[in-house]
Length: 144
Ligand SMILES: [Zn+2]
Image 1 (cartoon, helix red, strand yellow):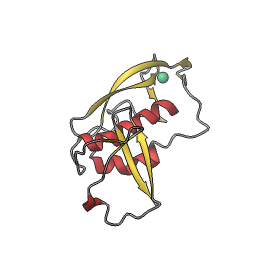
Image 2 (cartoon, helix red, strand yellow):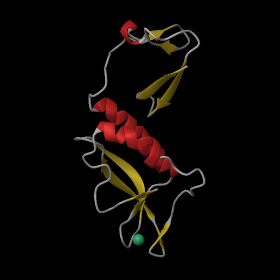
Image 3 (cartoon, helix red, strand yellow):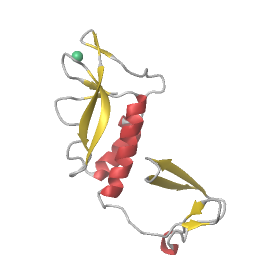
Image 4 (tube, protein in one colour):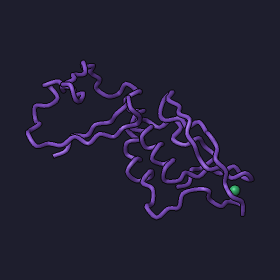
């Protein structure tokens, strides 16, 4: 995946726009090679850059950068990190419904209860897919 270096990637994009973009633009080609890439006949080098995700939310992420022209490239792993950050930015933007729940512990594992207002249409046998940004931040998708 190639990110235009002229503008900051995703600058001033709303969460709605980012959400639409995610499945298309951040889908990393499974056959894509991991970095370093070649640009200007040189090997790109690892660099930390700041990426703005929507209003006032900036993350620091790793890219491959051309030492000559400064063009930035994102490989599969870096793309996945960016993907997680975009998911999390929706939460941190405060545009999602937020609820606090005490974590329950049954002696083996932790679990939590969802507010009944949100689960009216849920039924037995549904599955939760959890995407972890790290050990304290998660995105949960209910399927089925
Ligand atoms: Zn270059």
